[in-house]
Amino acid sequence: KVAELAQKYGFDLDPTKKVYNMSVSEKQTVEILKVLYKGADILILDEPTAVLTPQETEKLFAVLKNMKKHGKSIIIITHKLNEVMAISDRVAILRKGEYIGVVETSETDPDQLTEMMVGRPISLEIERPEVKRGGKRLRVIDLTCLSGDGVKALDNVSFDAYAGEILGIAGIAGSGQKELCETIAGLYPSVGGSVLYSESSEKGAVKERILGLSPDEIAKKGISMAFVPEDRLGMGLVAGMDMTDNVMLRSYKSNKGIFVDRKSPRDLAEKLIKELEIVTPGVETPVGRLSGGNVQKVLLGREIACQPSVLIVAYPVRGLDINASYRIYDLLNEQKKKGVAVVFIGEDLDVLMQLSDRIMVMCGGKVSGIVDPRKVTKEEIGLMMIRTEQDGEKEEVTE
Image (cartoon, rainbow, N blue to C red; front, side, top):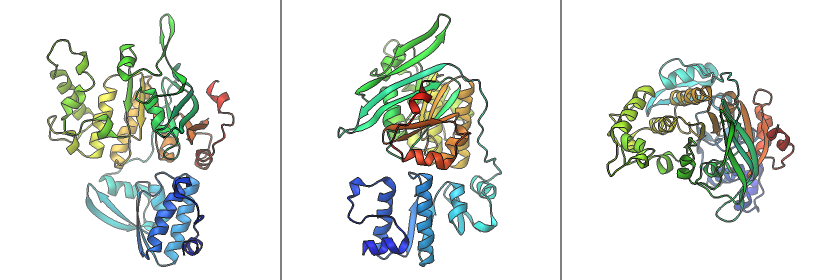
């Protein structure tokens, strides 16, 4: 029955294959086949392409069009406007939980959809300001880490991050992105390799080995590194605490004596509300009550306020509306202009290609290559995301 369904709708799947041996896209195919097997006529897909390469997305869309021909109703929830235009017949727009309207896809365009989503016209162009690249700020050499079950989560990863550039990290989910940023930040153990931090001074470049050091030890060396984790409220902020206390998490250890300074963090919290347009009743409101976009602004604003020389951000716009997303891109560009080395881990290839100065592609914990987004296509990066060979990236890394 499963083989019959797969053939009918055009799924490329071996019914005898174990699920734990399947790729992310194959697992997603199994999920869709499960509901078809049960006889469902309506499918609701929530961000189905978030973990797929462009090639896998094309395959999925071909299957969905096939299902439409067989009389199935398909609802796709997505924030990627190019996918909305490519696959849908009609589009319903929501803004802050409110139904705005529905339009025929053939009679609309991304600009109109954006205006309906945000409430005002907004440019869809992501800026990539030209900034003179500085020296190597961060050097990662043959970094190797193990996952909880002893499998290599990172396998000899090497790259350089320069001052005044945004280095994008691309890859399907689970390719080692999480382990990479947490290891550099001092939160995940490694079994091999080295991470060097370099900062120019009057006497020349000062190099520090930071691999294996805790975040506190890195800070004590005078290295200002900021990390915005994927899990905002689990790892970056404390949901039950207000903005002032969350800002204090960064500074309370530097207090001398038994009393903590609450005035400076409160002033900074109020400044962030004003500068980043954070929507909150006040600095005393628990951050867990704020929307995802405002929570992200609090976290990113707190880290940027430390004036870092290296800023690592993981999926900073996941789940945010277009307006909040573009504000985050502006903040990253502002840091780049200040000479910060920004490492940006993202899942939307279109955004990565528009925002990044260079893109490092990861697959299965290895580096597939480091490319200039101005000179490659999205499809070429997509192929690198499912390619495990490490052909030639060493030469690019050590230029």
